[in-house]
Length: 308
Image 1 (cartoon, rainbow, N blue to C red):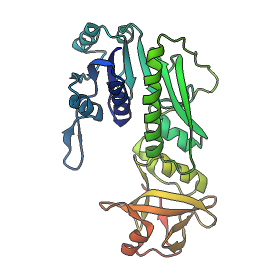
Image 2 (image 1 turned 180 degrees about the vertical axis):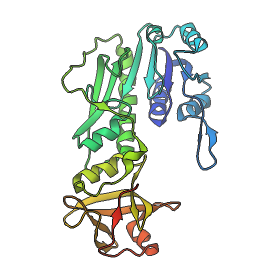
Image 3 (image 1 turned 30 degrees about the vertical axis):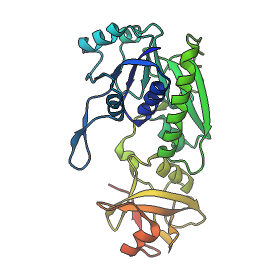
Image 4 (image 1 turned 45 degrees about the horizontal axis):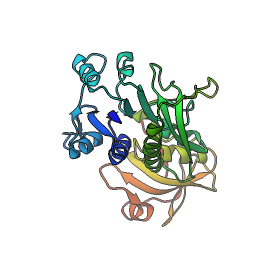
């Protein structure tokens, strides 16, 4: 098939790689403009751009599809069978949605209609969902409201982080899209109104750990925000990132250190306790608890706080 691909991060690059491997013709790849990143804040190409260029595909990076007539003309001139969209990050106006013969198909990382929106992977873990999945959706003007052409599920494990679930869903979505394209056109299943939830974009302020919450909630909070923006607390008024933890038995004033050993730092929560197993101080490296303790004197009754 002749496809246009639109996507930006690693999740999308996984899908693009699968379409290339399947032998589809991809005369145009759309991705967001290069962004400053890293310590030096140098401009960096998106994972999708890097992959596309490595395969000799044409890349176009408009700031907007609504306002950029050149972008719309490029898309129209392709005469594509379909446009495949995965975590692109730009709104597709109705004019663009109508251009490909078979429309625009989106790979969405949730079991729609649950978790429409920007951060379905994080919100599913944070909410304690038992499973997640991917949907291939026929795009329309509404936010992730279109009919679902195919879906695949995966359980959310008790130790899944946003990173591990992301990688699994990326592979699942790429495989499902590759399987769906040869079957087009398909009649989509209209999404029911019951069960609609929205996965709001992650705000860095949400990373703050509120020790008055239960250990179960904070366990999900830490896993949902790993790797971004990473759960944060304070120790001796200095910021500390928490990369790994698990609930354990214990009680006390929320934020109080109950026990310290090579396995971790046990901290009281509003209900139960958390054993912190991987930490990072500002400007330092991610360290297992034993390594972290070698450079930080922490003892029972010390207090972790909530970041301002």
